[in-house]
Image (tube, rainbow, N blue to C red; front, side, top):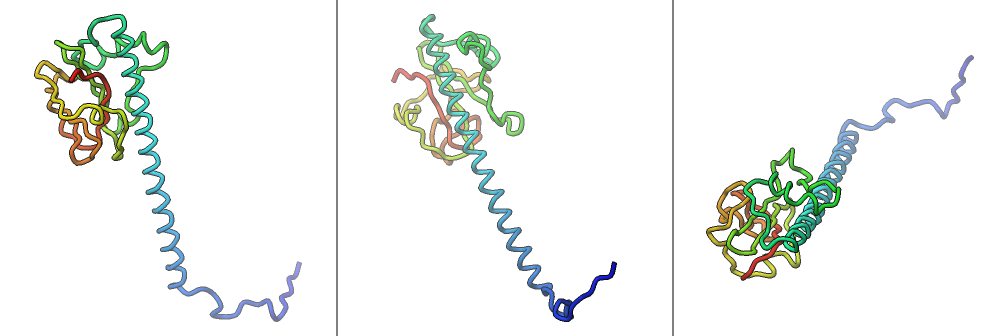
Length: 185
């Protein structure tokens, strides 16, 4: 089969794109791709934080159900012990675990004060978020007593419930910290 090219359809020498034009197009496409990746990562972090907020609320609800049957909150010194005490209150659902636990080492914290009814469940968030109704909104200037113990046996001073990334901290890791629970102020 023979192809006939008409005079007006032949490519002319020098009629393509220059190297500079191609580099500009590639640079623009690279910039757009990086903006998409950045916005996707921020959306994922907000999604993980939303799950953390829901998990903390579920654990607080389970502890309140535990308190309905007991006088004091679960007195534990390890996270697995808390899981054992509260698993019946989750009614067959899995016990909450930080959505990014394996990658970040971030996990939820439980603080209990043995001489009182006081307890806290806390999580370090990835984004700065002012959460209405958490401890730093409802109790101002409260200091956890010396008999309070965190689930990893560290002092409660290792926990600073603050929504502000620069002032909130859990065991030396700064960030926006969500704390929910009961504090008898």
